[in-house]
Structure formats: C-alpha cells, structure tokens
Length: 355
Image 1 (cartoon, rainbow, N blue to C red):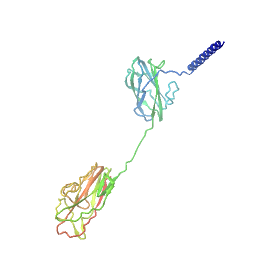
Image 2 (cartoon, rainbow, N blue to C red):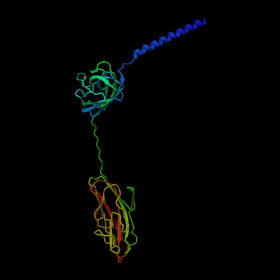
Image 3 (tube, rainbow, N blue to C red):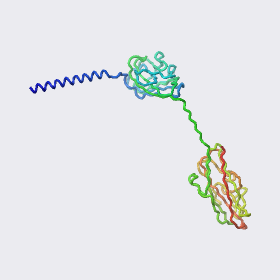
Image 4 (cartoon, rainbow, N blue to C red):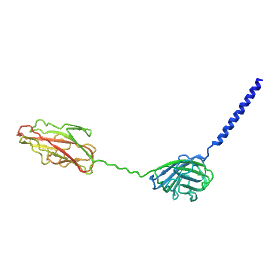
C-alpha cells in the first residue's frame, strides 16, 4: 500500500514539473526580444567638425563579425536613442541626404541608394556579394550637423539584400555629440624679473644675498677686485636694457678715476672699472649663464678689459629672454701717491623692459 502511495506521489511531482516547465516555456516565448542579427563590433562614427550646423565629413567604421553575404548598409541618425526598432526622433537641422561617398575600404563597391536615403537615413548599396570578417570604413562628405548642441545616436544595420529590405544580418548602435563653437582666450601679462646681490643661487631671486662689498686695503702694486651678481628675465617683445648709475669711488675730495674707455688693469694707475665676463688678469668674474639670450653690451664684454661710465647700458637683449645671470667684476687700482681714506661708491642698476 505504501509503495503505491509513493509511486502516485512521484507521478504527481513529475506532472508538476512538466506544468512548471511548460509555463516557463510559455513565458519565455512571450518575453523573447526581437532579434536584429549579431552585434557589429568596433562601431565608430568620426566627425571632421563637431560644431552645430556646419557641413562635416563623417567616417563610419565597424567590423564584420563573420563571413556573410553583404548587399546594403543602413545608417539612421536619431535624437532619442540608438535602439533599432524604436521610433526615431529626427535631429533638428541634420541632413545626410546630399552626402557623397568619397571613400570606402574593407567591403567595397558601394554607392548611395537614393531610394532609401532621406535627411536622417542613409543606405549604401551594392550587388550582394560575400564579405569576410574584418574592418570596413566609409567616408561621407557633405553631411550637415544637427543645429542643436547635444548627444545624437546612430542606428546601424547590414543586409544581404541590396536595398536594406528583409531581416538585418547584423546591427549595432553608437553615439556622437555636436556642440556650439567654443572660443577660448587668455592674456599673458607682461613681466620683468630683476634682482641683484653678492650671490644669487639657482636662478632664484629669493636667494639673492648681500648689498655691500669690501675691497679691503688698496695697493699700488696689486689690483683689487670683487664681484656681484644680477639676475634678469622678461617676456617683453623687444627685450630689455640694463643700466648702471653712480659715481666713481671717492673719499671726500679724493677720487679714483673711472675708466672712460675700455682698458686692461694697470696697477699703480688710478682706475675704477667693471665688466660682465670671466677675466684672467685679474682672476675675477664669470661669463653670463642661464637659458636667456641677453648679453653684455659693447665695452663691457671683453675679458680683461674694464670700463665705467655712469648711465651706460651694460647688458641688453632685443628679444624676450628667459633667466640670465650676470656676474659683474669690479677692479680698483691706485697710484703710490693716492691720498689715504675710506673710498666708497653706491651704484644703482636699472633694468627697463621694452614692451
């Protein structure tokens, strides 16, 4: 008896499974989505100009996923979504109806089918032929972009027929955007960088140190020499001029003569002068350094020759110049009869940009 009951229960369970399976099959049939063939991989749509309302060249590209018969390609541009089968909202101002097929690669031999083409739909046609797996590309000139900025969608399908009729072989969607003309402007302010010190490190004016320098005791048999540094830079179109102002060295009414013309150092002769290059006699100074293009002016650019005239241009450039560091060498010579005293001068350097 128990065995009969067990068999009946198993039979009921089997019937239940059959009913549930049948229900699932029915539901699957009811909700099975509409098919549009395989997905076209590597879909792309490049615009030569993405501004609104302009005439642009569109380059359509995709990959044929498998060997198949290919007779036509349909591209539809919509404003709402890329879903094939949905109602297409026509983009305002968009017009592909006058496009010219100017280039094709991969599967070739296509022409534009006027019967299937309108303002937002383009059909490429050829005699149906075999197409192998691989990338294809089609260049369309003379397409008018939508008149409103935003995102737009391409709905792409391939067909075995020559007029995009029947079921699509493969399909896919893509998106692109157009925008209003973007104008960017900026202003680079003019600048002039200039600093002085006994030392300046790494083209950095914040490291400039010192404003007073001591020659020590003068001797009629030995040239006294010291050096200071200047750092300059500018974006002025015509560069800058670097001037020096101030008296020669004096102690009351006693004077050490400024070198009015370039000359070498002559111990025992009254001389005060400077230059902006490396010297051997005496051993003092350095050549200009840095990536800038400024250079010492004439009369201040000869090694071992020195000069000083208040108001002279000692360095210059006719062009914008990046950082340029100058080392200024000073020499003093005195005769044996030079009156004793504390000899001083105060020099002012002026850098004027030529904007």
